[in-house]
Amino acid sequence: MTDSQKTVLVIEDDRDISAAIQGVLNGAGYRVLAASNGQDGRRLIQTQKPDLVLTDMMMPRMGGFPVLEFLAELPDAPPVIMMTANEGSRHKAYAEMLGVVDYLRKPFAMEVMVESVARAIAANEAKRTTEA
Image (cartoon, rainbow, N blue to C red; front, side):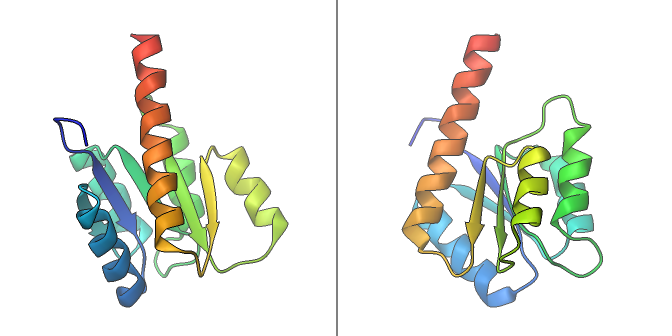
């Protein structure tokens, strides 16, 4: 882990899944924020500026797609990994069009998620370094 702890925002309405993901990411050395819907997630993105967003697709009040649409309008948006139990390829294509860096189908292995998070943050850091 680098000297500055990276922040991951988990937007997931299922409490058990959210708790499991938070626990694993905390254990991997990340600072973890959590929201149970897209509206709260958007608020946290604006106030906390996370290094990465891990969002569920289907949630009450606001799902993952409006979150992606919101992020697409931000000048310095964090990378996003979408998690879903949805098997549809149209959803995956739309998520990728909106810029997700990875798409995890539930249920997924926690180590796969941690690797995906680490990869996305590293790629974003490299991108920022080359742009600076």
